[in-house]
Length: 387
Image (cartoon, rainbow, N blue to C red):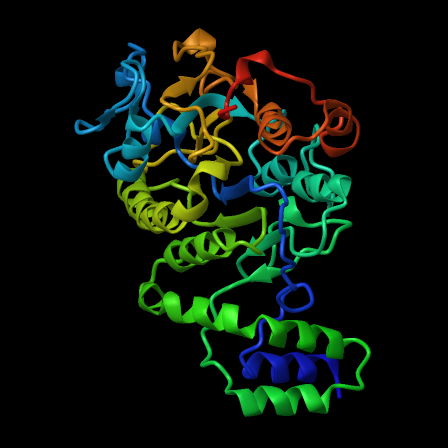
């Protein structure tokens, strides 16, 4: 039987096939309770619209500011479509970052995402993500890290095999069907152990699919993924590191309406995520990043083009929040890159390092030598998480 036929058989049975089926999740009895979720918004989220710097006098000259923005620190405000983040800000569980970016200064989505996820100085074609290197450095057991989606994003791919979970659009197979599949392939050295692993955790994944049934009816992709991520991470034997992504954040035309729709999807997912993570909330940090920002000026199609500097968010019960971290460069023409783009003053890789060091307890030497080569401590990012 061909590999394609095997995959079709497993898929039609309701078993998840992603990096060798859903991985076995070992019990982390007595292990570190700290959890990290990384969410990548692909396409280039417009940080100037989501976290508008209304305190900069040049902002209103180049943009038509949203009139109903939510107050933050007096200089920056928050897009009104994100009330969940506003509530986290009020509880001092949200940090906003502005004028952040990677060392990449061109405007290719593919290359920018490669740099963001590889953690290297430039696009390399690497299939090795900084979060996977972190998992490898720790020598963590199988199931310590997981992707949410059809396959793990690049940031979580590499030397260590990491599985993934995604909502199952097919009906669940009954016990007799699963038993017949296991018997059929019990002599197969490749598939037999994966089928056995999937059967062991079938009760957990079946319940998870039933729990997201209502959200699956929605066209919104983020809701079931974020609800599933929360349920996986909040279980005692669930993963400690999770990564997922979302697409559609490119706003070349009709930016206001496109961004409003994407933010509504994000807000619906955030509400489910925050609610579902409550059992482990005080141990959790969630990082939301994008590969680059957008141009300062609106283009002729009422959209924004690929830029450089952007915004990011960090939230959770473990986060020492209620503040914006930014060394604001200004939006005067002389302050912009090529007269058009926000200048990054904080390297996102320093933010990744700070989280791995301060939240997950990685040693500085390992981070600078093997996980994020050449990246050193940025004291502006000290104290992001609670002691």
